[in-house]
Amino acid sequence: MANIVKTILGRSQVLLHNPQFSSRYYCAANKSYEFIKAELTGANKKVALITLNRPKALNALCNGLMSELSNALDEIEANKNVAVVVITGSEKAFAAGADIKEMKDNTFAQCFAGNFLNNWNRVARMQKPVIAAVNGYALGGGCELAMMCDIIYAGDKAKFGQPEVTIGTTPGAGGSQRTPRALGKSKAMEMCLTGNMIDAQEAEKAGLVSKVIPADKLVEEAVKLGDKIASHSQLIVQMIKEQVNTAYETPLNEGLKFERRGFHASFGTKDQKEGMNAFTEKRAPKFIDE
Ligand SMILES: CCC/C=C/C(=O)SCCNC(=O)CCNC(=O)[C@H](O)C(C)(C)COP(=O)([O-])OP(=O)([O-])OC[C@H]1O[C@@H](n2cnc3c(N)ncnc32)[C@H](O)[C@@H]1OP(=O)([O-])[O-]
Image (tube, helix red, strand yellow):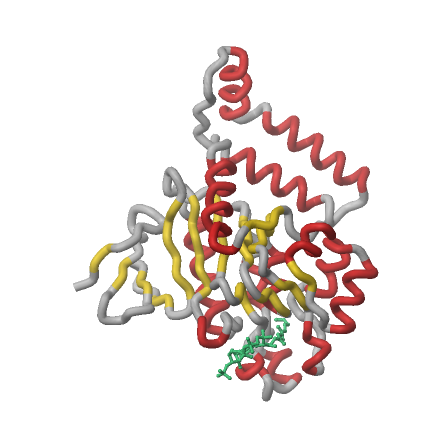
């Protein structure tokens, strides 16, 4: 009989672990996770930690893994008890890219008709904040997946790269678009045109990652960051995430207008009243995400 070992996603969505299947994780919807692990963690169990779990292939992002990740994120998005997501891999690899062995014989017609990569941007579409905790290799699709997240923390041995050019293809999940925004044109061009990797320290200096942390403390620190974000009003947090993302999509004056409207709208929330009253009453706020 399956034992409940970790609670994820609250109420009806309880993550079960069946000892008969050592690396398989189950949730109540009977979805089996073969390529990822998911658990609720953090001080108040408001942080969903997703671990990419294909160690023999350095977490190469096969279709099965990406589809499990997308399903798990759908559940997390719908669960009011979860405030923040942390995505991590192993100490050796966050993810060494899309699965080359799986896709190598694809034809253009198959890619086009099957809308290959259609579900890859689920991470970028999350309303809840997503933190990437990157140890080891984040290459190709792995680097792209990290860049879809809102904040990247890197272990001190992490390496980032877009090596698609070395295997006769191009970035396909944002590598050529997000690296220039994150690193500037020259460094992005160098990475994408040579396939050379940059290390964690260089990535931090260039602004791709916000903090470099000793590898064995990385996930703990990312979860602490998640806890800090989860301590605020989730309604307001998600509005701010939308505002910051708007900076990438619009000219400055449009972005500023969007931000101003968000600020105005915050005065229609109970959490704004609570936050400002708590400040004047010199007490900690109790947010209700409304
Ligand atoms: C999505 C949009 C577009 C994106 C495109 C891409 O991402 S293109 C991809 C861009 N990424 C790249 O081009 C990076 C490709 N990877 C590498 O260059 C090297 O693996 C390494 C430098 C990361 C580590 O070297 P190392 O000597 O420490 O380790 P090792 O090499 O011995 O690997 C261990 C096992 O993992 C396997 N495996 C690893 N990666 C993949 C993969 N992507 N796929 C499948 N399998 C992969 C590897 O075959 C081996 O399995 P085996 O043979 O034992 O059954």
